[in-house]
Every structure is written in C-alpha cells, then in structure tokens.
Length: 621
View (cartoon, rainbow, N blue to C red):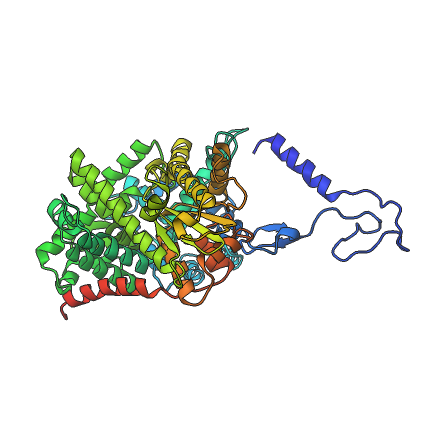
C-alpha cells in the first residue's frame, strides 16, 4: 500500500474519532445522554466513532454491522511463519531445505495431513491442535495455540499442495536421512509468507472489480481460493455419478454413441464397475485409517481381478517423474499459477511408488473418478474426431440437464402441476422464443431456471487471468440471462397460455444451475450485477437478483423440504435480506439459518446403490 493510501486512511480514521462541541439542546442536561452514544471523557463532545466488535472471523468491525453474518465471516485465515516467529521466511532458504530432504518424505507428510483434513468425521479445530502438539514446542507451541484459540488455522490445503509442488520441483530423489518432524511442520507456514500477492498490487489498480467488469488481483484470488476449497459431499458426488453417467444414459442411450459406460469401456479401456470398486476401496481405506500409502496386496480382496486393478490404477496414477513433468507443463502453460493451480494432482491424484500407491489427496481422487473427468477421459481418447466430439458434448450436457431437472421436480410443489419444462414453454409461447429449461409456479411467484454445464477455465481457476474470469461470467450469465428475461416477459404477458388460467405473478426468482459449481462471493456477485445492469437484463420490478447454484445445493434444498423446512421460493426470498445475501445458497442455509438437513431419500438411494454394487464385489479377506 502506498504512502498516500495510508495517509488517506489515517485522515478518514481521524475524522471518525473527532466531533464538535454540542450545540443548543432542549434537554435539561448540557448534552443529552443516550445509551450507546458515548462522549469523550471530560467534554460534551459526542464520540462520533462507532464501537467495534469482534466477528466470528476474528476481524473487528463497527458494531452497527457486527450483529448479522456477512461473507467475511466465512473466511478462515492461516497462520504464517512471519506471524509465528516475527521474521519473514526466505523462499531461497525454503528451497535449500527441501533440496536436502527426500521427495517421498515431503509428499508423505502432505498427503497424510490432507487425508486427515478431508476425513468426513474431522473436527478441524482439534486437528489443528494435534498438528501444533506434534510440530511445535515451548514458546512456539504457546504462540501457535493462541492463534488457534483466536480462530486461525494451521492446516490449509492450499499450503499443503504448495509444499508438495515445491518438493516435486526441488527435493531429492535419492534416499536421505529422515528430518525432524518439526522441520516438516514449518514448511506450510513458511510458504504462507510467499503466497499472498497483496503486496504486489500496482498503485491505482482496482483490487476487486474494475470498470470493465474484470476482477483485480484480490478478486481473482478470492475466486481461486473458493474454487480450491469448495466443499466435497461424497454422497452427492457418488449419487450424481451413478445417475448421470450410468442410469440416465442407459435409459436414454445416444443413437450413435450408445450409453456412456459402453463408450467409456470402448475408448478408455476400463469398466465403470471396476473404476467404482477400486476408487471406493482406496477412499474408504484412507478415510478410515488415515494412511495415504496403500500396498498393492490391499487390492487382492477388492473383488476386481489383479490385471484390472492395474488398469484402473495406471489410469489414475502417475510416477514421480511424470508428475514433475505435468507440474512444469502446467506452470509453463499458465505463465504462473503456482499459488492456486493443482491441475496435475486433479488429473493424477495417486502417485505410483514401489510396492503400492500414495494417495496425494482423497478429495481429488473422488472428484477424479466421480465428477466430470471421466467425460474428459473419453473426449481425450476421441482425439479430435469432430463429429463424435460434438455429439459427446451435446449428450453430456443433455444428461446433466436431465439430472438437474429431476431434482427440481422433486423440489417443486406437488398439489398441482407446478413445474413446466422447455417443451411446455415452447408449446405455449412458440418455438422461436428463447426460453429456459424449467419454471416452477408458486402461485404469485415463479422460479425461472436454466441449467449450464459450463466450467471455469484453467486460467480462472489458477487466478492468472482477469480476461478469462470475465469470459467465464459472460458465457455463464449473459446468455442465460437473455433466456430468463425472455421467459419472464412471456409469463408476465400471458401466464394463461402456459398454466391454463390467468395469474398475477408479482415476483420472479432467476436461477442458473451451474452443474459443476461456481464461486459465489461478493466479488463475483458484484460482477454479475454490473454485467446485467450494463446489458439491461433482469432489471425490472419484481425480479430478484440472479442466483447461481450447483447440484449439491439443489440437493440441500431438497433435504430441507423433506424435513419440513422452507420451500426454494421462500429460501430465495429470505436470502435477499440476509447477511449472506452475496454468498452461496449453501452457506446461507447451513451457516446463517443453521439448518442441518438430512440427505434426501432420492440421493440416499442412489449413493447407497453404488456402495452396494461395490460391497457385492468385495471378497472376504
């Protein structure tokens, strides 16, 4: 921050703390005493500054905004070496230290703590304290414990991934004597000194969003941070995989491509049953035992022939040299991205080692197997065949849309026909009108929904490009907003053509379902609002701010409603005036409303069905 910025902030601070002598008052006192409005001691001068309170995030804010939750309360900040020791670490010294340590010892350290961190049963505060007890002694232990007591964190996935990447780049491959565990524990904190780019922001740059709708440095990093730390609901992921890539394609096979599992078997050479079984066996072992190394003999009892286990592991795993190559390639292609890009670990979440495998990150393994990467596996094997590639893209998009609409149908009111699909809208308003995938009728309120399978580009995920973030937003929001606006206009002009009876809709809630998620935060919300304002879309009276949700959030709403909670329309209406109105729907429901909905019955049946398939394959040891 420049000197002039500091001076300007001090001027503002000074003005907040200063006031004038009270003027004439009708009160019998020299100045009227009011609760919550203190005076400067010894004077009748009103203390114009507000009182400050500490938020759950640990940050002090004016008391007038300190009551309601705000997006800042969702942020956890990690402890750095400089904060702990008082002196900033030197990156060159970190690298020199890593050069003296065997790569596998460092990767073993990072993979162990990532396994602990992503245990579904974990208490992160307790885990931080265990990390502190193991790695720090004496005064350092006292100091680091005080940070934890203040709500700060020690274990941050970003830091552990950064240590792993730096070890791949610099650590020794030949055997070396094991280092003291305290040394390993210092590496994440020391790297934390060097991953904050706020000091590199040029003078005059808008750090959030500029006038052209492009995010600044801090906004880009907020997006990358939220994407990297997006929560994993393993049950939702497995249910989505089972329904989206297996059941729906079986029910609706492509005329030329067939079902997805047949296509995957043909192009990739692996059966989806084999993929499910091997990955669930690995994930269960890591989650239950916190052992990231798994010997080859472990797979003897997983019910899959040894040669097929090898085929699955060869597809998901990479050698040390191979991982180093992909890491260097990733950094070169992104022209940076070290802070946030974990693409090599996403593609290869398993490291092949002598006698077995090392699971680098169990969360990435689950996403690798049950997310969108199986689709990209097939796309890659098609090797640029334009016709088949185009067919697969359209087919995958359609299958994802069907799955999202099934959840919406489960959410919609059931007393009458309340959900209308694209075909219904086209029948009512004509094939030439732009319409959305579905609308839900709540009487005087409508939810207008369009589904997108658009995913953030690599540069957006890595935080290296403002242009790609803007392009992602334009592609996701602008085109969908045009369809939503057109649908709203049609319903307002003649609701009866759709429903068969006149209506008096007073409120519309635009919803974009980004099936693979999108980071919703104050920066992206501001960018969306500015974009829609410039395009004059969704600006009329009675139109709520557009909400971007993912599949897992729709399933949370489904669970809320099955538990007798508020409807989707009620949640969207209440969120408009909530403290977390610029945060995700998930955060609003779970953090601000403090609801803990059970998994919906539909989802339970899907993921348990997958688990049952795996159990039936497993032979007793």
